[in-house]
Image (cartoon, rainbow, N blue to C red; front, top):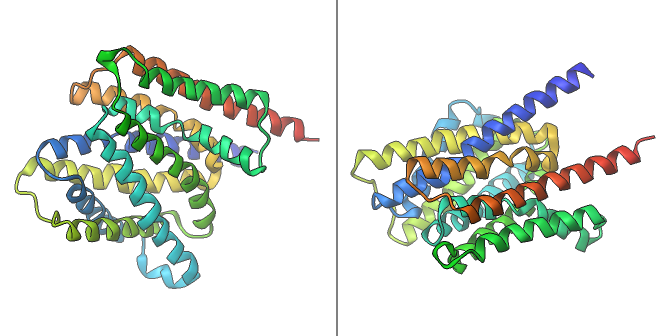
Length: 300
């Protein structure tokens, strides 16, 4: 029991580290794009640098020890799933501030529950209906704020679209990466996403070397903190805790993003954003509580 508790405690700490690391993505990306570097350019170099850093610690030559199908799936989920989620969520920054983006993205645990209910794999209990209502209410509060605070519907759609994709991505990643070391899984995900962004940047004529120093500093931070550290700690924690508990612990991320945005780039932290975010966080916590209660009832 002590080993299990220690393992869960370490995994919880890793997920908190991952959440704070992911929480810096929006702010760093906004600083880079404000310096005139296109989003595709920034993401291409982010993942290229991330892959280079990971190649030094992930022992990529060990790929031959694992099924080629599993290696291909990790590359594919990085190149398609992770790259698309990254692009949609960060493209939303062109329309909405970092705070609302973070909270809107964090509706994904509610979408996981709703999708599971539609598929018949999970029952839609009263508690879960309440949780879904809270999450949707949080979205409505932010989107339907007074005129001075209203959010662009395009940005809202992009943020919610990325949340829906992530609700399918996280369980899929949890299943695919089993048996593969966390650092190697992270390397494959990052390489897959890097290939997609480099090709996209090449095809659109946006793959070039930024001339200024400041964008490179922020791109390096994206590669090290928001990619290498974030993904490796996420995968290590996910392997122990599973996607549901990871989603709950990660509730710290949108609040950190909103506060960091306010401190670093002066993004206004509106009442609507905070109140809507609290409703979404409450929904996520209620979903976790209902899951734990159901597990406790199921125990003999």
